[in-house]
Length: 269
Ligand code: IPD
Image (cartoon, rainbow, N blue to C red; front, side, top):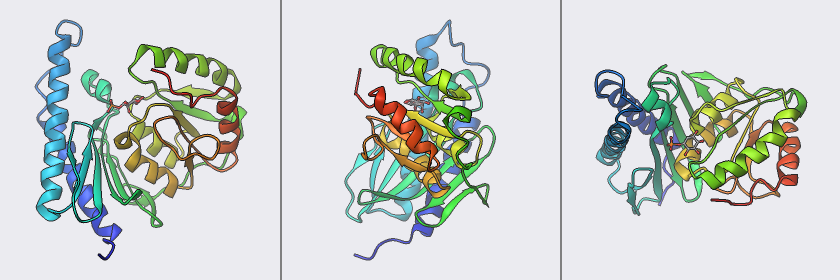
């Protein structure tokens, strides 16, 4: 079987992500979701939009490539026979979406075997779109992007995120307590894919987080790597649920050393 062309896969990822991005904005129920008074209702609406976004992406891709597989946050799961698997986060940053903080994304990536070869991340609120193909570079709205050169750990603006389980959060807070005094400052923007894209275009210097699922990491991880970041785990391990560290060479090692001392890839919660 010949390997599919990454540019063709990217075009499809982008088209599907853009359509889903439009859906989550246009079809969001009118008015502010009453977060406090109707917590479960608000959550249901988000879940419903998540589900509809994922269904749209899957249908859009299947129409062009009926033999592909899927792995999606909302449960899309299908083996496929073509060797291509699409990894989808239909709304990354769901809590931001719930609160109308304009920092959430639709993330669509194409994986061939274990390797992500194309990815698109669309922020529906700002319209910003990041794309990458393996070996083909990373782009923001069609313009090439590059990570910042390492400013050194002490001058680095470092983004991170927290899981949903209380026990994991407590451990993440302990790690952050040690990291924070050793860096320029810390950001928690609330959407892992956008953190990785922010790294890619120099809006932050580094990112780390425990607990990312494949759909949080796939497209944004490729964008960051193609923009010049090292994206990995600790002790030479690949990036994964135990830990994702992403930063330019030099800073990656400094941050990874600190996180290794803190045993930050010990899975908790
Ligand atoms: C979450 C966001 C958040 C990160 C969490 C993710 P979701 O994804 O990316 O920034 O800290 O680890 O689970 O649940 O909004 O799709």
